[in-house]
Figure 1 (cartoon, helix red, strand yellow):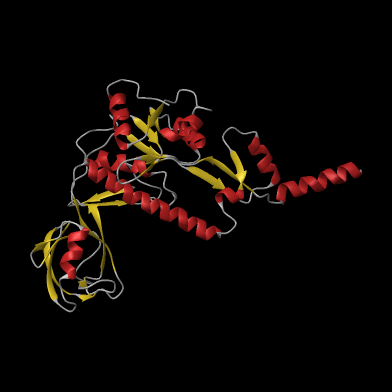
Figure 2 (cartoon, helix red, strand yellow; figure 1 turned 90 degrees about the horizontal axis):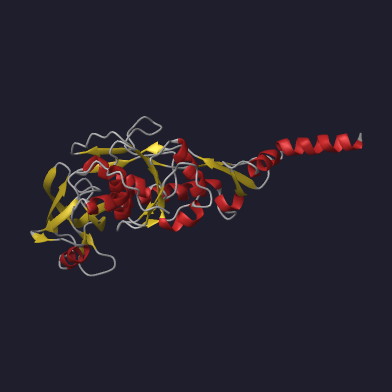
Length: 332
């Protein structure tokens, strides 16, 4: 009777008492060439006509289950498709859950920008001075907007940040200047009254700018359910499939993962084993794996899944070219 009572008590605790672990499982895959969970395209192109596509370029994700009980954790240890990890690895104790989610979302937004820049560089679009945002109480409010390229001020070309700064240093605050730029619908000229520069001589336009690749169209990326930077590579490939001259997929199902920077370098990600399972369930022809994840990936490869080793955007494009030509890509 004592043993039965203890067993019942422990069973009840195991069923309802949360443990300091989370369960990770293969998450959903999202075809970057198609609609997201909301029904809207993951990559929306405006200002030009995107290519028709037939294959899939799917990013892979990991699902996180928090507040699991003891029995769920115990069963997860024996399930090849579940990873049980300490909760602090996903939710650091010095951050709130909302702060972690916000950081993951910020990482994804940064990966979007890097993905777009890597794609535009590959497509040959030039570096220009591009407006990122307007400062508070900006004198350019209503005249300039994010995404505009700044081509010249008072007829003086401004091809880069250094030249723009030099031009504005020579202009007194409160001066009316003529700003010529470009946006999706063509060139434009606006008059802006400059403001005082707080940290140097001369004046400012009240805008935050960056040297960035600029194209006469807009690319908008939206996947609200995804966080972190690991979708970068697949987003870049999706943009190239929609805007480039090559049918990258050849009609095949391609899955992959990996961060990407503006120069096209592909970086490591977490949860590679679980993402391989998701790619296998998608029946992908190949799974693009960051080269720094290959050693971990080889520990447990789903049957029939080809792991293409990629360290850069060019490596990924070469792997897809091999696949289209019937060759085996360079593998892990």
